[in-house]
Image 1: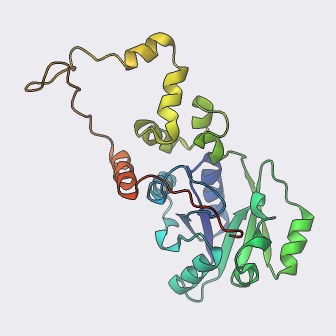
Image 2 (image 1 turned 180 degrees about the vertical axis):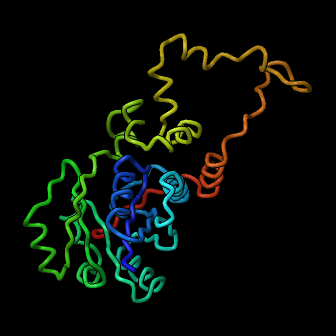
Image 3 (image 1 turned 90 degrees about the horizontal axis):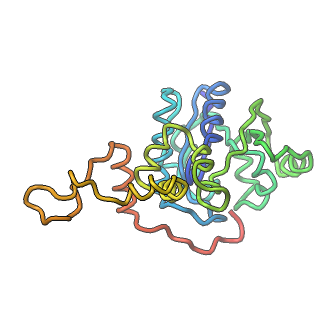
Length: 256
């Protein structure tokens, strides 16, 4: 059974990730995904948090042919492919990339070995047209290419992380199923962005204690109210963040 492999930094998962995963399910009998560290990026959240966010997206898509496989996570494609080959011996493997990555692949660690161990499926991402020169360079390294009939929107995790427009426009980059958790946990500062954009009266109300809940029986007057339990997904992400600690930002190696 052919297995499509799609790894992503998921920092955070966007509508583009959702569209791609659902499109892959129309092309392949089995699709697996995972979050990983990208040695060429600085991440906004620890890997454990990003894996939980991707797990929530997989659950929202709700197709049994799609699964999260954290054991495939590695900064290096060559390691991921080795683990996938051991996990599914003899099964044809399709490594899926967006068109925005094509020019980078020849610089990957052991790029020729990566391309020898799988077929490379390319999904066109809006704003990054497939270049014939990139395809020719990959074929020169031995790539067996598949150009997918998919159009992935040009949504960008970087806009959610704050390097582009923030607030409600950034939230629209994220699948609806993930938005409540991102706001409840204030991941990527989205809750703060929304509050900053709120009308002054609403923003002031958010910081004004409710007299009915300003203190609880047995607590000192003016003490903060008891914490409201978060939904299960939010609690999982909160625990993952606490266990992982703040994100590290090592200097990336020269090649992925």
